[in-house]
Amino acid sequence: MASKRGKLIVFEGLDRSGKSTQCERLVTHLRHQGQKVEHMRFPDRTTPIGKMISNYLSGQTQQEDHVIHLLFTANRWELAKAIESFVKEGTTVVVDRYYYSGCVYTAAKGVSGLGLDWCRQPEVGLPRPDVCIFLDIAAEEAAKRGGYGEERYERKEMQDRVRELFGELREHHDEREDIVVIDAGRGVEDVEEAIQKAAVKAWDVVEQSGLPLRKV
Ligand code: 2DT
Ligand code: MG
Image (cartoon, rainbow, N blue to C red; front, top):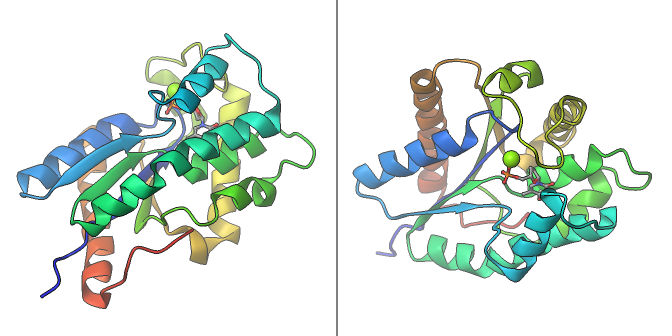
């Protein structure tokens, strides 16, 4: 019998929506169940491209808007093969942010010609998540959780626009984005429970259908 493949699970949401906390909790939960799990995050600031992105986000360097968009995308492409290999060998990959952030954060800048559709093109062909868990919270609520940091994009107006665009991505491209919305304005345990349910559901679909890992 062919061994079961791993799953690709992505977390998305605004800054301070609880992504990192919930990613860690899900990883721990799955490992306790005896599953092999790899935890990744984008941007992955450890690669040479990731370092350029990190310097841009901290304000140390400037980048033209198309250029930084493509660097974020390239940062995913550098790890695409690794993700595919993990999934193939039976390891589940849990990812903190992915191409959805890539599309909406660039589009939220409002630069002419840099809409959601343009932004999504260079992502086409990346490993496609089995489920994207979107932690939904209003920007005001998120800001109450210790406030925003110093990085580029961590401003209320930008966050409001990002949330609207996540909504557009879901509504207009429902069938290709695999997004499940979770109300993240609740307590940590309630959110965690909702996430586990969503993960199990996506899981069952993959197991029962024998669906291979697809491409964006
Ligand atoms: P973190 O705060 O999660 O480190 O993210 N971003 C992220 C983009 O603009 N494009 C992308 O492709 C990704 C993955 C979101 C740092 C910031 O980078 C933004 C917040
Ligand atoms: Mg941040």
